[in-house]
Amino acid sequence: MGSLVRMGTMLAFEKALRIVLGSARRLGGERVDLDQAANRVLAEDVTSDMDIPPFNKSAMDGFACRRAHLNHELEVVETIPAGAVPSQSIGPNQCAKIMTGSVVPEEADCVVMKEFVETPAENTIRFTGESTADNICFKGEDVKAGQVVLSKGTLLKSHHVAILASVGHAQLLVSKKPTVGIMATGSELVDPASRPEPSQIRNSNSAQLAAQARAMGIPATDYGIAADTEVAIDAMFKKAAAQNDVVIISGGVSVGDFDLVPGILKQNDVELLFESIAVKPGKPSVFGVSEQGYCFGLPGNPMSTFVQFEVLIKPFLYKLMGHDYKCPNVRMPLAEVIERKKTERRVWFPVTITEAGQVKLIEYHGSAHISSLSDADGLISVDVGVARLEKGTLVQVRLI
Image (cartoon, rainbow, N blue to C red; front, side, top):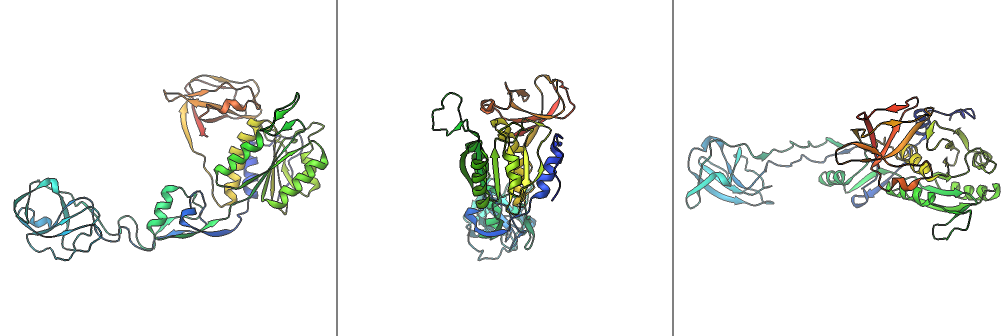
């Protein structure tokens, strides 16, 4: 699978992402009904079973005519409502009244808008315009029978569901979702419903990580808080790993006396592929693989867990489902200068987009400052080696 990057060496983020994505193996497929398709990933190409439109269709209310006869008075031989088949032929100097979406008679080559006709006598019209467009949606002009309309690997959204319905795919083959187990480590942590004692803090990471996974439509189970002991962490990890494809651990991954996670993972036959990334926040992030599945170890500070889920774990989870994830982003100018002294890591900042269409940094105190995201529109990154970005510099905003 790979070899661990030497301890003390920070791995470039781009290389860490390649390692993570290169380790992902699709989990197989399953069939679901159309009403369960949203947020799933297609596991096969979808083709149309028919031409769309399936017939020459009127684009508006009006009269189906022969263009060559528009300078004559025309007899209206029938009215064609939507859902009906024409029952009359259109002969010389004849037409049919027609509704939007109705079948255009074979002999007609245009639909004249009703606003451009007058009625000199009963069941007779005269075209008053100088010219007319066809105003016909021609058979197969949108999709041909047998044409691929959605490709394998597509992440299905609501507009894709409409396409599936239009081509008759009431059931479809999609990739199985990975299951995610989430656990937090730290003897100082208490549940969110608890009132922390002195020296304690509430565990926000697990709820946050579960919410991020569930927003992708991926089931996530919170296994709770493990105290900073080998026995507690080992027992909780064994349970989570046995029941899930991916385990995400927050806390216990740095180099302190109680940062026990990397060692425990190795004892459980998890092959660690890296233990440090040149990013901020999230430097001591860990990724490993085993016969059972995959494991991420993230720093305990909540900004680290949020950012690393967005930039590293989310693309990986989609990759397990066969989808190459591209985060929604916009390119916009900075509203102010950005400066920093240390440039050995790629750093992510929370930002807001101003009414003037510029990117402004949000006050940010570091990786524990999760409330800085409350008004954030997205994240921007400053690359390794870059100490200053001038006002007006175009930056990529990763929308959140």
